[in-house]
Image (cartoon, rainbow, N blue to C red):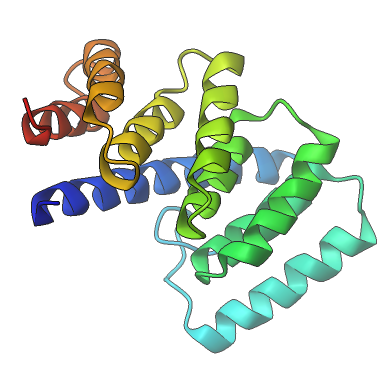
Length: 186
C-alpha cells in the first residue's frame, strides 16, 4: 500500500469527522446539549485532563437524560476526540437506539468501527447512512476508503469515488475523491 493512499484516506476521514462535529454541534446547541470544544466549535483543542473532564460532564448529562440522542452523540464525539473508539461506539449505539436514522451518528460510529478493525460493521454503517440520505457524501466516501485502504478492493472503491467526485464537484471532498481515484491501481 502506498503511503499517499493512507495519507489521503486519513485526511478524508478527519475532514468528514470535523464536518460531522460542525453539523452535530448545531444540533446540540438547539437541544441544549453542551457542544464539545474543538477547533470547529470555536474552542481550543483540549488537553487530556480537560478532555477527561469534558467526557465526565457529557457522561453525567447523558445519564441524567438517557432519552436525549444528541447527548449520547455528544458523548460519542468526545470519546472519538479522545481516541477511545470502543467507548465511542457504545455511546453512538445509545444515540442510535433513540434515533436509528441519523446518518451523521451512523457515519461517526462507522469510523470508530473502522478504527477497531471491524470493517464490515463500518461498511454497514456507511451504507445505511447513505441509504438514509443519498446526499450524505461523507458516508459514501468513507465506504470507498474502507474498500480501497482496508479491504484492498479497488474495483469496489473506484465507482464509489467516481460517484463522490461527480456529486461533490469541486469541493474538498470531491477533490479528495479524485485524488483517491488517481491512487487506485488501474
